[in-house]
Image (cartoon, rainbow, N blue to C red):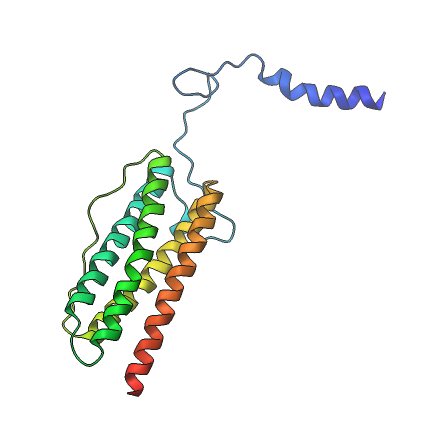
Amino acid sequence: MARKKEQKQREEPKAATRGRAKTREQGRPQGEPETRPARLIAPGANEATDAITSEEFLAGLNTDLAHEYAAVIAYRTYASQVQGQWRMELRKFFEAEIPDELMHAQILADKIVSLGGTPTVIPAPVKQANSPREMLHFALEDERETIDRYVRRRRQAEALGHYGLAIDLDDLIQDESGHRDEIEQILKRWDQA
């Protein structure tokens, strides 16, 4: 008797939806109101900044990609322009950052394409520096901003169900945090000299 009751309860929801066909264009049951794309948010995220549609997410990834392009340009330019007693050390440092930034750009561009978007080809503005210290400060600002963007993008990726990308973004956050820490250490040594 109890088994029949359980089976009947499982079948009732199926019976309630049998007569409602979905329209081909909307992919929703006939007679139900059309809804806008869902704005998804991950648990623990800031609803004001992390609720996002797929289109907004792709735009955010393109912003991230533009900043990775800008980082490549900035580090290449700084490596060439750096002058003074720290030239050789800073030139090597800036040049060593370029492959990481290119790899980040590759990850982002590939993901944008796999999600149905088109990767940007325009870099974000590059800050022009007049001294080695200014180069380091600009690089540090950029690394901090990048970490903040990637932390936000990671939450958004998770909210949209892009769990593999969320893990990739964890790796990018780790790389950028290492860059930030190294620049902070260089600036500390600079102040002590």
